[in-house]
Image (spheres, rainbow, N blue to C red):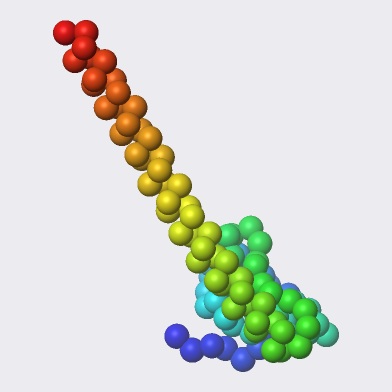
Length: 105
């Protein structure tokens, strides 16, 4: 998928199109949030808001974007580990109950 030229996400209903999934931007797309604003980098959307990195020179924005992507990866790993822990805790409770049932017999 190719990147588009820098687009103003606040113009011509683009924000609504992005939030509704009618226009899909890839993470890393250079955008503007207003006609006279500095360039930002699009990260994604949750359907309620648009997540982007703003502020500074192009180099500073790019560095912030790379940092955010790295943080998001760590967050995803942590979420997966929490889900694994929860599943193991449920399994442990089931094993404890099975053990209690064996003792009662």
